[in-house]
Length: 53
Image 1 (cartoon, rainbow, N blue to C red):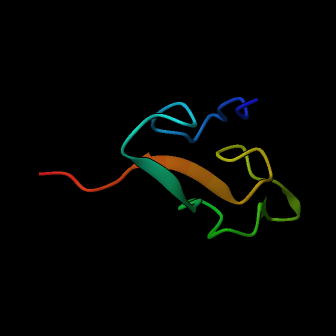
Image 2: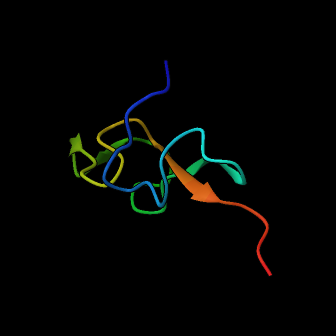
């Protein structure tokens, strides 16, 4: 079962042409100023499109 998307995801998990990346807001720590990062909901990861053109 795919993971539900988080607010910082550009696209839904499992979408072709996507991959996991470090959250740009918290730098992959999942925390900002001692609190859960709202961008990745504390996971430290976001789903983004890869490639491009």
